[in-house]
Length: 173
Image (tube, rainbow, N blue to C red; front, side):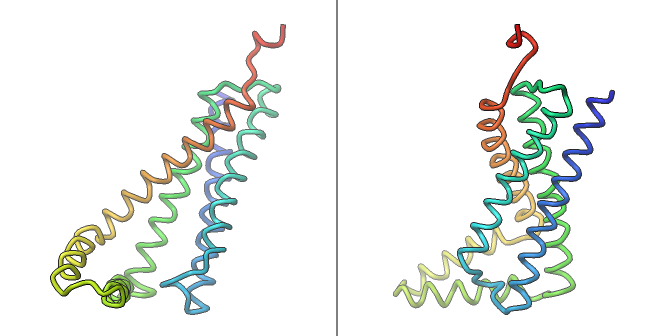
């Protein structure tokens, strides 16, 4: 039971921290007026924070578990952190798109249409592209894709970290 509590606290703490970093970056970009086209460094910082927080959480669990870690435990921690963080991020996005910036999606679609015009696409190509984009721009669908993508990313990072850090009791002897 102590092991289960350890999983939960590590997942919740690191997931909340990761979501907090992501939300703070988004709020800074919004305050600076760059929330439609953030600088590449914002993505890099988010990606690095994602990797570092998952790896540190796995390392902490291993230390708390007497130096032992299975591959499955590492994956459980990494995917748990990624999903919890994505859920908090989805809640933030809901609040942002409904209360802070209600016309955010419409503005994004306008910017996308202008980019397609600048690329020299025909009117019917632009209409087809915009219609497709409209189908995938519902907040619920965006949240689902975000959570699934985050879970896949968490699996990849934690699988690599788990493969490197795993140590079972049998390996000790």
